[in-house]
Amino acid sequence: MTSDILVGTASWTDKTLIACGRFYPPACRTAEQRLRFYADQFPLVEVDSSYYGMPTPQNAQLWAERTPAHFTFNVKAFRIFTGHQTQPAVLHKDIQQALGPDVPRTLYYADLPPEIRDELWRRFAEALEPLRAAGKLGALHFQFAPRVMRNREGIAHVERCVEKMAGHLLAAEFRHQSWFAGEHVDWTLDFQRRLGLVHTVVDSPQGFANCVPCVFDVTNPKLALVRLHGRNREMWNAKGLAASSGRFDYWYAQEELAAMVPEIRHRHAGRTRARRLQHQQPGPGAVGARMMRALLQ
Image 1: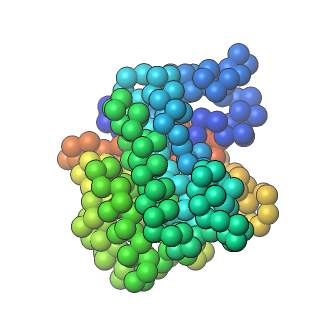
Image 2: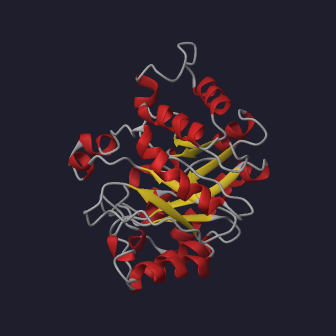
């Protein structure tokens, strides 16, 4: 496999990955054992937990210590930064206290006072520092909510994220079709190039407002990123508890993965440092990631 094409999965601690019994040996029972085993199988992982709650420098230090020298962590941005609703309970205790007793049950970025927004950005960057110091921090993945559309407000928010995380490599994944509808494709790609954002190639079901087409292109010469969400149309917009994992319940056939290889190789050609992250929902995700790695050899 080309040395600078990296293949991995989203999270090494996903409940379905652990419960499926097909990836981790029975002896891998602790968080440390699972990360060490995972890092022996793949050179790259996406940290998914940082979307649900702010990571800590202590955990990042442990991740750095438990993985090989050239292992890479792509880290998902905390959900308040990407336009998703957030419960106050997942914020730091002192932040909750600063918000006061009348805080809404769900928060959006715009609901926060400017000084608290700045403090959250500061803490997010601080939490990533152990990975960056160890040379193991890849891209910060900003998976923007469907409510972040290609309009004045959405464009300004994306620009704000880039400004707040200056000095880091950011990847953008849009979840509203307005960014890539018809003639907007070229505009959005140029917008990402101007900001230095890594364009995320997304494979997912089509025909929904919260899906974007699979556009193979590169907007930052440092990195190219592909995320495979599966093609489970029936579950994509399901409601309730089944929605979070059910939409990713899809097993790519070898032929489907093989069809993407020419595009991946083409985008890789001539790039100084191109990395690809495969995202599938485990357990099939670990199997699918191995299949993709084999196809790229």
